Amino acid sequence: MRKFTGMLALALTLSTAAFAQKAKDIKVAIDLKDVKDDKVMVTVTPPAFDTETTTFFIPKIVPGTYSEDNYGKYIENFKAYDSKGKELTVAKADDNSWTIQGAKKLAKVTYLVNDTYDIEGTHEIFSPAGTNIKANENFVLNIHGFIGYFADKGELPYQLTVTHPATLWGATSLVDTNASNEVDVFNSPRYPDLVDHPIMYSKPDYTTFTVDGMEILIAVYSPTGAVTAKAITPEMEKMMRAQKKFLGPINSTKKYSVLLYLTDGSGTDAHGYGALEHTTSTTVVMPEAMPMEQLESTLKDVVSHEFFHIVTPLSVHSKEIHFFNYNTPKMSEHLWMYEGVTEYFANLFQVNQGLITEDDFFTRIAEKIAQSKNFDDTMNFTNMSKNILQKPYKDAYYNVYLKGALIAMCIDIQMRESSNGERGILSLMRDLSKVYGSSKPFNDADLFAKITELTYPEVGKFLQTYVAGTTPINYDDYFAKVGVTKTMVKKPGIPFLKNMETPYITVNAAKEIVVIPNIELNDFMNTLGIKGGDVILAVNDKPYNLDNIYDMIEISMGWKDGDPINVKIKRDGKEQVLKGAVKMPMEEMEGYHATDASKAKIREAWLKG
Image (tube, rainbow, N blue to C red; front, side, top):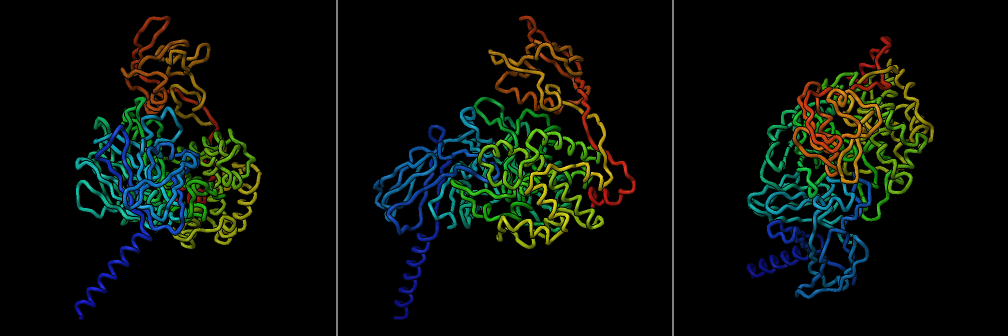
């Protein structure tokens, strides 16, 4: 009897556990081994439903991009089945959702996913937010492009199983709970957490190191093997150690992954360069052809920005971010903080830790001020943030990296003045992290009052006047507080662009790159003998045209005076090669310089404290 009772109890326990699993867990399987027509199969096992219909969504919008990218457009052959394998009725409601009839019987849904990298000419999805399917070689799984969610079920736990070739390894901050070299199993407490953890499968090329208890993973996919994780790790480690030293006790994640995808620059590969932040990782896309020194320099700026997102929005964010709706989102008022403070830190830490000089820092700030003037300087920044998906605000999105960073700088300076140099915006973010943290979102409307409470009345007044208001910021007033004044400075320019924005080149009907006639050319072109009307066919033996013109501009930014160069041109219908040495143009611009010695103490606290 005791044995029977025990067996009955065990049976009841197993039955209850199975029901609980069915009721609460969502299981997803992705097959990366059986790739057909450049598509992969996804199978989703749903929870139990108590309604006759349900809707399955693939994200329309994801955090960090704030653009309507409609990832459902790349889903094909969506089907729903009951436990006997019978198809249920499915209706596609829009680009990103499918309504399923007979939801109480639903046993699984299946669909095929097409990637975005090889068709980038047909859409505007930012490459680091896109997807890649290159059978037996590389898969970039930005999860929002592969896995969806059922209506009202996004807060349930997910279990993801990925079947992949044994030759490929998945780089991610997720923990693989399966020992097999062909099957990975990842568990996540809810859909937003799963989406926040991209995975890149490729031939293993990675390094790891630990900084103040945080494990850092650097994983690289390089199509020709020209760039390796080992090669870029020394500079990355130097940078990330400096970042952690700058941040101090802020340590909101135990693992951080950098997933670097290097593109060959062809028409069927990614060509949107940059990065997309996640709370414990970042996906980065860069051209493989970029010179190593320039790649390292670019990664320092790009990855440092994404890494600082562990402060905000990971540790400090609103309910709109915490409970983000991927298809009908409500946007937060505080993009100035999520992106602006992050971008400011990405520059401030470099001067703070001696990676750049004070003058370098001032030049960067001056460039942000100049570029921000291209936007409406009276635009209410909280209103812009809240309505960032709509015009005219969406067209001003880039300004969050410009004026948003300048807002952070002014708050930093004001806090230094009010505290006699003792406190700055980093200490504010530490305090906000303690009040809120990753699992306690704030109400949008409460943030300014909380910041004022934690800082000084002058900071609260600044926020109301310049962030929630329409008054342009007089940056000279804030620089004066730290003894910095306006001056004219010279800085290296870009060979093919004047003042970083006006091109010396255009494209003709044959998609060839042409030097614009009848304009004053810069030192680079004059020294090499390039003339207006010349067609640029190749640089350093690499052909260029409309398809990769941005690669040419990007690579030219890394040239240095004296570098050997050859440019193949066509002039008056005849081809020739111009050989020589690079002469980088110098441009004069408004900048800033420390002049007031009486403010040296507070300036030192601002830049080095």
